[in-house]
Length: 146
Length: 88
Image (tube, each protein chain N blue to C red):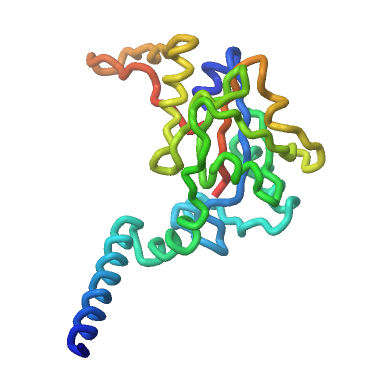
């Protein structure tokens, strides 16, 4: 979301919600249970919309949002499952095509593309308190997913 | 001939077990290895889109569950960052 906050005045963002990656009735992972993210693969659009709403509510998700219909056309067109990043330029062409997640899902590459066009957005480290050690604080924050 | 077939079958079995063991190591557990093969691999596709390709236009559903819009309605004025994913 840091990338969104940094560049939302320059570019548009759209989250496209696709079929679940780790539903309870398919390949559920331990992290899903730990994080209390336990949903079966939706069998209807209403179910998918409900899960998407849970997500946006839980994280107070600010990005504009669209949901893939149950025919999964967006997923098929963009080979998006389970997660992927793209940038479409003003002419409607793919300007950046990210790798397939999770291992090749790299928000830093999106940030680099945006930085190359609009400049790097730097974040000042928080001011040191009187009790803080003398060593310098870390520089700009790491990119966060989405 | 029978001996040849027997050794070939044994060799194949060893390969399959080794491959599954490697997958278990990669995925973290036998359950995750099965899940990866059964549910993930069939759905993961590199795709044919490349940088420079026309971005496909697809109709999406808004968060209200009712209204629809097209991805390409959001393009034109500025670059559009698309973030594909799900909650789980």
